[in-house]
Image 1: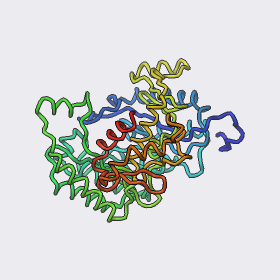
Image 2: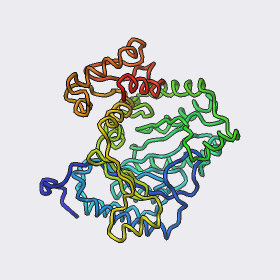
Image 3: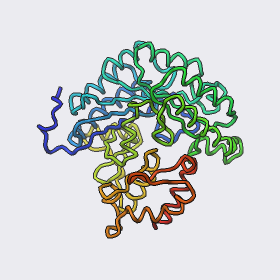
Length: 398
């Protein structure tokens, strides 16, 4: 194992965040537009071998890893020994912070007590579990493979294993979902005392079964008023329970925010590994090929599997800074030492002044506010975030 001392490698770039894509699923959910393939153990073994080779190819891009996030797909489908091989590869080739956050996405029904114990023993210290709903009819609508009983058992396993560092994902705005069923899902969630809760509005992405069903008329989405009521209820209920509302869709107990995702919202650099994974390095966004067989073939040949690379322009960077930063409840730093000022094309006046001018009407309307060099959405504005961001872009000429 390499010694965790980055000072011995002065040439390393200071990238502290690693994302690993595990694309395997049993069945694709109707709303999912992430790259995924049917699980097959033989393919999974070849994939993990190739993934380790890609990680070795990219090891010199990293400095001290602060977070590692394994997403999918359904990473928890992998046998424990595959996780052991993957984590061993990372520890052998990367420098890890003593308090590194290592997250893995878990689907109910795909873990048992031995697997949870094994994951904890190799250093995984944060679990993101895709409950989505505690109502079987809603899970069926979403195309999930688990039921509410599976959810309860999986959460009990995590708690019995002695970990309290887990996040529960929930979805609102599901066709057929009622306010009463949403409230019940939130109550059940809080009974398990998760350190982190994510509440996502069901969004029809193109090329998904959900989108096609809405277009054909076979799926009817809930009214916008009900969706808004669900979101407002979640904000009030979860914050009253002691969870900090630190991002539009995310709530955490003090000290339990997801550091990996915060890096995304702050436009931090990150390394992506795996088929279909994205990277952001030196103001360049790149994506790996999605075909599993081709990905494995290319990596086995010792080549980088990236198929697309795009340099982010200064204007695009400013737009990213605004729409990602305003997701955070603290907002974006618009002071002269901020990233926005450095990115600004309006160097003479300074981005601080330009953004204040662009925000004046929104401030008057009570939708945004400025506090200590931070522009942020108000409680009223957070539910209108998309339209507010569009108006800001228009006012800034972006």
